[in-house]
Image (cartoon, rainbow, N blue to C red; front, side):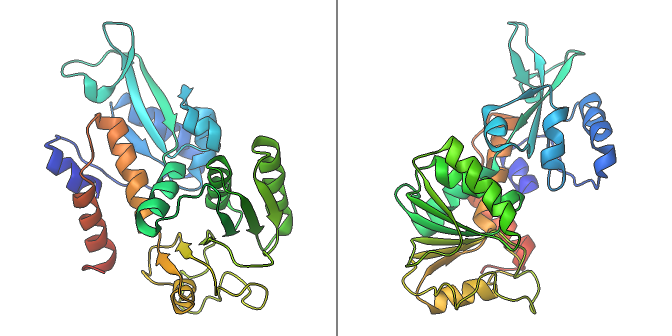
Length: 279
């Protein structure tokens, strides 16, 4: 999606993938800085580790406690730090790494555009309390969810996030366990569904999907997981994680380039790459 967008914007850039060991992350970031990369995307397990490796953290990274986008910057002649894409000639020697998080807003945007879910005032059941689940839970609470229900295989992890939300967003009524009645949205933030033989990420005896308005699965391959099939059969509006992947990437490109990302071109490239054709 990035290379398709880069071509559409006429940028003389290339987006490349590198496999980096967590032990080598600091060296990799410093190497990219030395080679004047415009920026980086980081995925698990680097998002938490990178927090301590940035020269400056954006409010988004501080709020969500993770860095998934790095923008390299230098001081412009007016004294302000500018993205390296701002410099048409030689780049000053001193470069800094500026860490951002584009994941949380991508979740909200995907829910709004793909499922017409506003979050504010909604009752939400979140399955999974790992890294993605934690960011989603905090975003839902910040965005004004009325009630939030956290379910995780290890209950203590859900309890930790619930305590964090209670402290940061006391207006959100957060519970550990399944709700007694229907909810507006169910989100799967677990890895269950990546394999055909995977079980459902929730217990249908403890929580029937009937009455739920919408369901989001953060998994995007396969396009329709057993969870989404069950949700669709129960009458829910459904969406997978493609929108989240798209919007976090589009925001990263905007941060690096200062240009409006071509969302349609990026989506088309993603669909073609992941599914081979339109879905």
